[in-house]
Length: 123
Image (tube, rainbow, N blue to C red):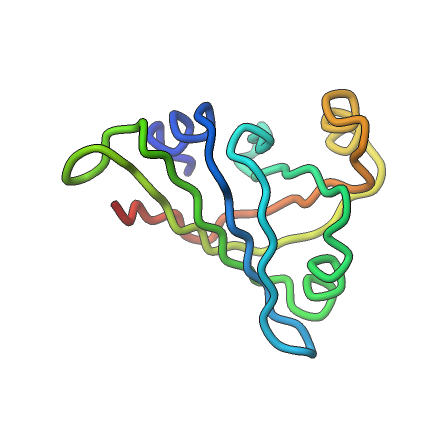
């Protein structure tokens, strides 16, 4: 489900935007392309240092949107490629996927695990 082009983007420097919707309305948080790992079953594993409001929103409504891109990857119409990912999220605070990210990111307090519903190349 994860396209090769998206995997190529995740190897580049760039900002990832994660949008959630909670009781207080929408919330947006950022991370880095290179922080995201892909699980064996195709979920995005994202280290969470803070993200407390994101976690509260996911508990209220697990649906989220993620945008990711890189100017260094060839896109649909020239330089620059990007994706919109719609998915369902959960925060993990123990177990193998938590431990995998904790070994790489010592500051991690949780792993944001995202199951993609749709992955659409936007540019």
